[in-house]
Image (cartoon, rainbow, N blue to C red; front, side):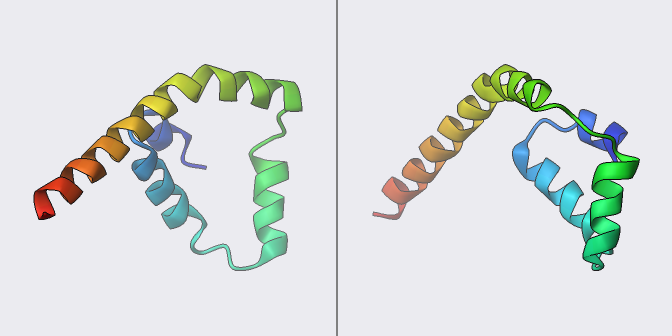
Length: 78
């Protein structure tokens, strides 16, 4: 639904924000499932596993940066 917008994001927070805005209007669980499985298409478990493995280094790097930032803020508060 928001593929173009998602593809240009660089941060996990941006992805979450886009997804929240996109699905906010989908209160009907049946409609949400229809969008998820019929309109978007299905992915095999193998494809999902490959994509997870491919994206893991970037996700871990961003997580590490966030932890360092939080630790830095905690030290500054003392």
